[in-house]
Length: 275
Image 1: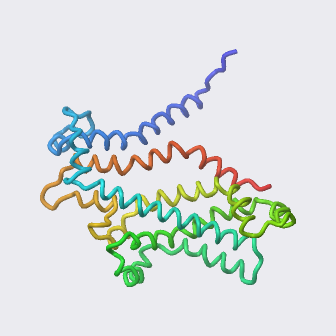
Image 2: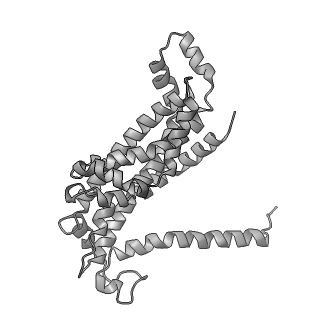
Image 3: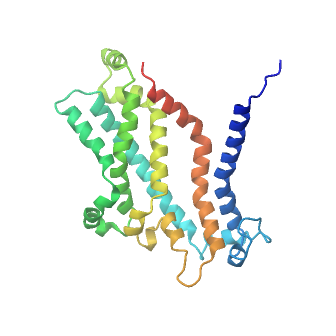
């Protein structure tokens, strides 16, 4: 028998289709903008397809005109170094705070999580004093990025780790396994979904960060967000090349989402279920 579609379901489907088009429109506009020249962008063809598909905008943005290749390399270095440090330190801290028993354990755990309440703007002055000598290196961003993202990493990992039964560690201890072997051969493999989830959150925040990248980088270590922002000149701007730079900067995020969206959903559900 054919299922009858109610008016509510039809309206829901229409709404979802409209919402999908609204979400996809910025991507379409950015892509078409990257293939136009400045005159066409501001000459009445703002939304339509390009009259001439200027693929040279990508070459100009990537090469000497925009230096997006250099900015992309710096962003990759900063992001993956931050991911490595936050994942490693966050995992070890989460294990020590949740699975070990020592005096002041809960107080330290609460103190670390309070770091999520401190906005970057409130720490600009002390960060300037500390990182001023590192502005010509990638460490000027890697250090604060790691520090600001460790609390959220610990929070995500702790939700997963609390669901792992203690009996697994006790059985490993009875079999003669030391603490390091237990952590890295038993607990760590079970925490991979949580680590992926935390890494995606950290990636999105670090990849798109602008404030610290503007203040603590020089031209040699400039990231994508700052580099694209400075492609806008005082008297003249090549908006086509800027659009090409935006497309290049957006691609890693889109690829990450398409590859990991299912994993993130499963991880969040698994971390929310007790028992």
